[in-house]
Length: 336
Image (cartoon, rainbow, N blue to C red; front, side, top):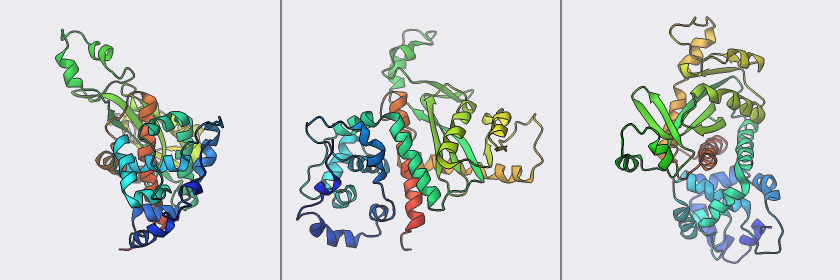
């Protein structure tokens, strides 16, 4: 199994040595997060992923999850984040490690993600969305849908240099180290190689309520049904949906879910006369701010790994990190 969290903290070098430093930095995001949000639910969600085999006890899952949170928050590699936890006192305190506790080897982060798998990370994400709802941060009025490109961890320029014939359109797919990545098109003349992440976002709080990751090639609208189902599972549902013209065509599906389809219509289509259609349409660009935050600070647009599963977990970690920041700043805002 794994050691209890208290076993990492019950030492003379624990609370006493931390106290003055922690008090000086009590308004730091990590200190406010520890105070405002109880992440112990992670243990309950993943405990059956561990087997009592009488071997060496694993690091506690809450500690491992917090290290992944730090990695995403500060956009660090596996190696760099474990080094930072080892040397940064606030990071140690946030994770529940005393000064004389060893930090996990960086290779354990990948093993932890493999142990939990896609389903458990989806559950953790949903629980954080539920925390936002319980805090009164989440509205059920309007969701915004959109997709964002994630470039594969592949040197496309180098692959193209080794290409023998310009007519060999399948060369990159055959020789790519990431065999699950594919080409997607932002426009007729602009493409990328990798993956695509679709999200639903609450228009009021900017909490991301659902995440779906595919290869780059599927059309944006193909994300809609799964995203709506995931949102309903996590939050209980919502009343209206808006998004750009790429998501047109799911009116009947949305109607069956009790959702008003305020997706922006194409120019050759009849425009809805509902008052809230125009109001919702004006809010659609807000989701671009979320993508910008993720790409600028949390490595949203660049894959760190190979394979759809690992990219989906990376995307979930990005969005749950941004959600936790929103929750903390709502429940325990830093003094101005």
